[in-house]
Image (tube, rainbow, N blue to C red; front, side, top):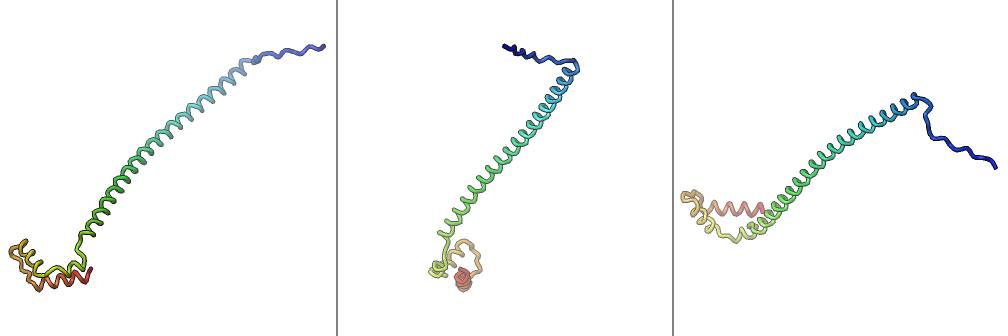
Length: 124
């Protein structure tokens, strides 16, 4: 039978090879540290952007809420507003009396109120 040779453990032949390998290891470590710093900087930027996005989302929610409120008020105002049909039913004399009640020295007369009602009816 033939004998199989036993593999020798890894032994660098010279101190130069060890120094070269250590240099490569140090260079790799330096690259890894630089990449880690870059990653940390990118994470900080992402966190900053996330905060900006969160603030924008809050502002959008507030604006949507405000817009819903305004639309609700406009809808309510439209429902409670006097329509052209309602204006024709209001008596001019009644409006004149209400105006005089609010303004003691009103210079408007019944003809002025009738003219205003006609204008309002045309616009509506």
